[in-house]
Length: 549
Image (cartoon, rainbow, N blue to C red):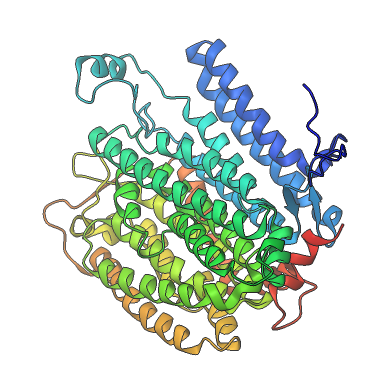
């Protein structure tokens, strides 16, 4: 191919184009490479191994990959130091990223326990997703004991996207991570064994709305690129601080930045489920297989908020006056609207979905604080909420209709659970009290951390709204406790399935983490950002780590 030259014969200057191969730090890339390699290996196993041997092999591959990934992340804490960029500058590795990645890995491993659980020889997934629900072909697959072991490679690829999402150091990498995370989840949502049409409807809704949000996100990236002349977070931050790219020397590029921030925010706020981009959550949480709901409610939320924190604190950190009023409005709407709507819910999974929306509003108060304290509070909140949520959904998988068939969604049907299964009801009560923010639980410490950071940043009115919303949410959490312990069941009451070793392990870990993080939060809070000073800007612990050469 002939080279293109300008009129005077000199070769053109193309910034960012180089003939030298990028230097790759394979050790820092190892965690994501392990998950990617395990996912590819699982696909090959799916194609070539005998059907009877697939399930134990797939579970082993997924579990070992996640364990190895977590160990590697822990060992990298000292290697990243003050933060480094890897893979040609497209990924940023610092303590914040490693904490989020480690949290995602642990929560994914616990979710895998729920996904792998079987009762009466069956798991939570359809025998053959390609068959028409209720058809003769589906019946034949059920009788033949067919299993959807493709679930495990899909989970690994979703986790791969989750690990990359908060670590992205440019918008194109972040968009790719977003799609790698989302596409497997769209499929997994439609694989429920029971209520197949409802599950498929949830998957279609999630896919269509997710595609719209991705389009907004991509359009926002294009506008930000027009303003800054780059998609790299470092270059965007420099452009924001200097008033835009060179072509906007007269300062008329701000409309591009404002529209870009708004559209990028839509894509990210959709993933965290903030109002008014929350409508997908109740339907998807209710229709998806409960183990997949647990995966999304914990891991996806951590990854999405990790990406949101990085975007608003790194490339958009110098434009606080533009996005702060927007997030104020979104946070208030999220806390108030979701809390009020949740009071009217009668299905346990829909109620937990709106609970997730409310908690997204609480975490947004930490983003608005725009301080290192707020960043640490958000990180703690995400970890604490993830463990509690997994425990709650594990219990949901055990409470069944009277015939012992499908899960019992109607809250009125949970009457008498405290007498029928007191240990299970007590564990769920602990999780609900943690959601409500009662002292001696992880939820109280998480709320205190994010609200304290918001008050220190001058966002006291936002904290007042948050406290009032917490009072409203406490009503419907306690209502569930009252139904379980103080209301007589009609007839024989709900059927409680026997908790297998895996589901029991998830509940035990959830209880232990909820109590440990509520009673002894100091070691975790003190180690999140050990070098940060009180009130310090997030730029001091994130931005400089990705801008230094």
